[in-house]
Length: 151
Image: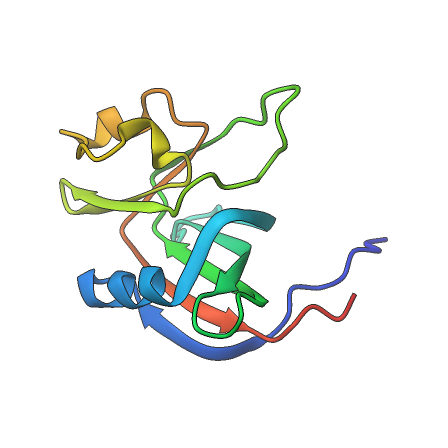
């Protein structure tokens, strides 16, 4: 029996994680001290699996609206690889900086620990994964604004 609150339904979106879509996301939301509320990983098996999908639900602050909290969802499709490393002693799922979105070899990388690069851009998809604690690589993705949490 699952007693957790369900993920809220979509209020706005989905918007593609293209360069323009990512720019709007990062301009509208402040991710410093944002919390990753839920990570849902779905993997199909069988003769014709459609691949792995990941849904990340992040509580972020709206920049132009008094920095109120709002749930934002990143849906990643065709996830090739990911890493979720919850180190002991550190708050799990608290973002220090905004996610970093990069593209290498036709795939999008979403790095939730991108502060380690500073102002430098990683040189490859492998470099994005080296040393990151929360990172995902997918064929495509979208972002959405969710209804407020009911609990």
